[in-house]
Length: 91
Image (tube, rainbow, N blue to C red; front, side, top):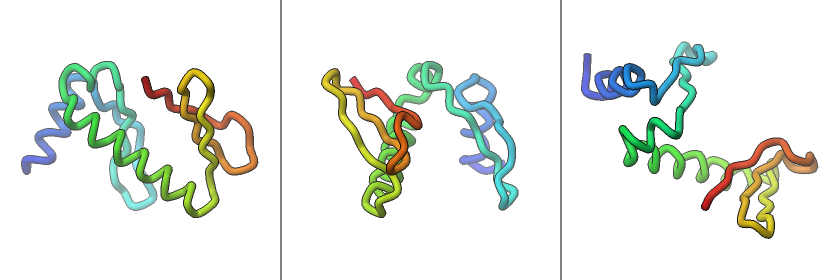
């Protein structure tokens, strides 16, 4: 088992990553438990959230998602032209 596989196994064992299935290429897909990752792997979590945000911004540049910031600072990423698909809250 290489270093990356060991780290993933650690995150799974600690509950920070939860196996969600396989993608079309046979790669494992994981659900991220943010509250656990904040405690056991904050650096990984920050990198992951930055990657997600960059992917969403790329989709925004392509016109596929809208970005809306509410008065309370909630950042919403939604499919272009569709209300309230999902939101990520940054404090």
